[in-house]
Image (tube, rainbow, N blue to C red; front, side, top):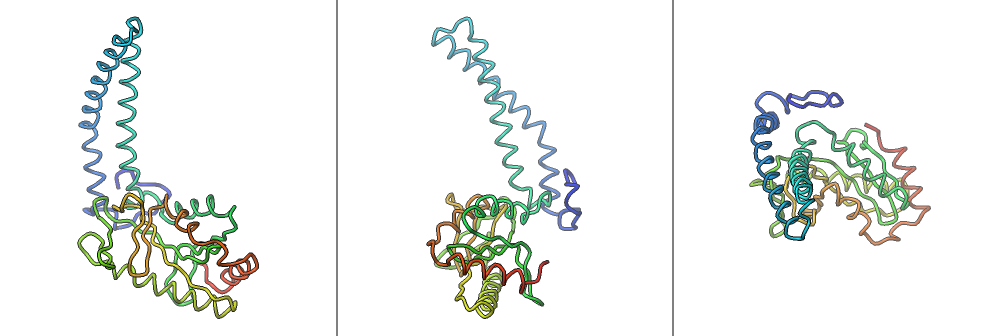
Length: 255
């Protein structure tokens, strides 16, 4: 596939005539047009820069001011387009969402007393990408991505993913959270209520980056640690956190 990653094995979902394949194809075919408009924007930036130089009495350095502004405009335009394409990497199969989220969780939470376990499952049941245990409680997290134009929202308590109901996405993860809660409570004697979270790597969420409904939280990767740390600290003490983490590592199958 165009621009595929050597670190991610090919998947039929991302080849042939899939939306991901067409997205990359059109993106690359549109590159000459993007460069053309970038040159136009840079030229306008140069003219504005020269005018500003003359306006503020930098007659000798007006050309330099124009070049400086032209470079800034061209660089900013390139950065905006690159960022838009980079945001679709997980959806396109070029990066792994679980690797991105795992790195974010460890970098932001480990120093605050949280334990992060990746790829865990109750034997014979579906797996989850991350289990987080810390002072604010316990969370399970999975990773997902949708097309860049798919909006995720909640209306009157009902989840919507694009034009479809989100119940089929929410229900399995909510049930897994309940199953994990029952297992950890039974094995440790510590009452546990687990919050399920779906980390959305591609798709449209509100500006604040969080949608909650039907017992599930949808969050952007940049928002996930803030959501976890916003829970009231003190729900679990150090001994309980350590006991839950050891029990989870022992009782939950690694996948």
